[in-house]
Length: 111
Image 1 (tube, rainbow, N blue to C red):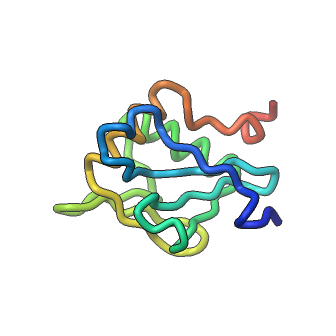
Image 2 (spheres, rainbow, N blue to C red):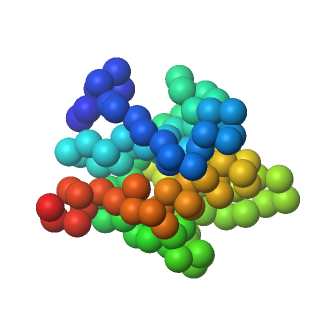
């Protein structure tokens, strides 16, 4: 398992307008880890590469995904390890990155 301290988290290039608050992810050999930049020491979700690629593709195409739900003020993401809440603005930045291909897991794609 990859140490929490050695994971390299990235965010969408569209996250700049969100005061640095965003969906962050780290692609490792064991899976993809997701956290909320507002609470970097808090909950981390883990997805397999295939699960992550499916989630990112759904976000990019605007189709529903079982790990994502929308509430009045938040976007809720669930995965192995619990749940995270993002603002709609933070989620929109993630979606823009997914549409640009920034979220793909080369490992999940077999590359």
